[in-house]
Length: 419
Ligand code: NAD
Figure (cartoon, rainbow, N blue to C red):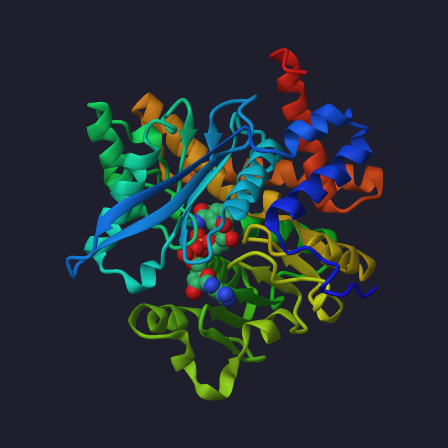
């Protein structure tokens, strides 16, 4: 099936709404319930001045969206990226609600974003932007209201600055306001690896379901940050052969396998392109490689009606949020490709964020082994529930995942008398 790009929306908010419609139809959800779920409950738009290193004052814009808080406080990352838009943040907050629902966390979805490019900012500028954004949203967030976390181009250090600003404003140490913090100020063991680790648990389960051996399974990974880089390492440790990786500047490919550790060193000191010119490929080519496992771990809308037909992977594990459009989903399903949807595949991050928040509230901290054991149990149970529901309804994993979440959120709204 070919759909022209002109017909296909790439607006993430519209895409998230289409995904809700698909699951709501199967659940025969009343229209008013579907309508609640298709819109965030609250959205905050802020602008704030920051003094730059050259003495000039720049005004930044940012957003925070809270999609649905029927089950509990809202939760979700803050993205720093030049292409952040309000619709993107709204969509990401919706996806967070469905993600928390799939893995059974007592949260609704939230998300934030600041239009900026950390790659062009000094450490001091980044700290001032991080603190100023937290100050601008401080009344809107809180350990029992809305709890941010890291996302694209935000780091544990940024979470540390934001926690500090919030704590100063509230007059007390408030580690529970944000997750993904450095360990020394209330971070959780295992949080840094959690998104990739959770993703790898689902990939291993999907390989087993497809009767494919883990040893030697080939993998291509787009994006080499928190999610992609650690997924490459963990998949390689599990026995898979990493044949391609990329970052925002482009990718590298070697059918014989790449040295993941060496690529990490190159990324830290220079660029992954330094691996060798002869291995160079584009981000677009990486997606179309003949591999067992494809892990999009960068940004939205990379698998669309334009290239879906050319995707050859057997399993796509969406470490990134929103990498596949609904039109592409239909093409991939027709080709028999298993898509482990973002709301499940990358839910390990918010799961361990939840563990971090629980530890912050208890002031009692767990070992890494305890965190990983709880994470694995939760991810596998959630994967099995989604897989089985998809089989029962003869639908794809994404729609089944949405069905599970939507049922939970609707039950909470009913219990609270909202519907
Ligand atoms: P990150 O900032 O650590 O890394 C992002 C990576 O993507 C970098 O390697 C960057 O070079 C690369 N990149 C940026 N633009 C690109 C492009 N156009 N093409 C190819 N690569 C590009 O961010 P992250 O935390 O790894 O987030 C990546 C994805 O994972 C996002 O979709 C995010 O929402 C999702 N995610 C992250 C977490 C988390 O805990 N960090 C949790 C769930 C989902």
